[in-house]
Image (cartoon, rainbow, N blue to C red):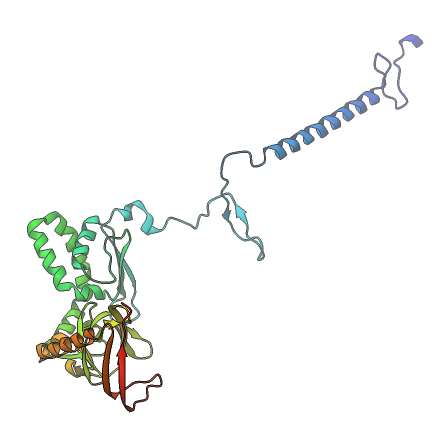
Length: 341
């Protein structure tokens, strides 16, 4: 029979007392309290660490727009989108090529694809093109990015020169000629039919409205008549307008009261059907004039008189005048011409 001294002591909850007399439940409760305090202390320490280290790392975090989660905001993710890839023209293999030829879908009858544009990447080719387009306004072949777009009119204007340079290269530098031949063959396949059509029209001295642009290469000396006077101008550019006309921008010598210089003037050629004799156009290249030397001499003589009016001059004038309303009347004036030069 067990004696009272040997009985196991229990606390009020029936749990055995620890040797020092403390109830086990009290010990467990104390341990839980210590764990809670430790947890709170750890969380507080983590928060302080995060607050102190925010923005302290010398680095960049890149986020990408991911699949949308809603319509009102963007979903930023760390992973690079799988549906994106490097532009094909920026890929190393593409960069190595002398030419990048861009083909587009052809919505006209005939070939399913058409040449849209050509990117010249070869330094050798750029050097040759600088020679081909020397003096041509609007083409700078020495740029890092050199792109020619359909319908490639600069090459129409300079094709004979381009061909001559290629033939010279074949004799002097066959390796460089191989690069030029690539561009030549690419464009020749696209432009040959148009060149032959233009050549045939010019041979017969006629032109159509769609081919009218071929007459007005930048830098071409053209002839026109304005207010009964023969005039020679230099073409700056030309382009078709959606309202049905070709607009030619040309420059001529003028006086602004202080100095002589170039002024510009637009010349309009309205759309027409069929073919038309080039000399019947109210503006056309001076090379088609049958009496070019005579007309040039008269224009130069008139220009010299115009030049002589510069400075202070007292002269009598009797004839037509132009007012701001563009009305004309016969007047007799004593006119003083002044110059601020």
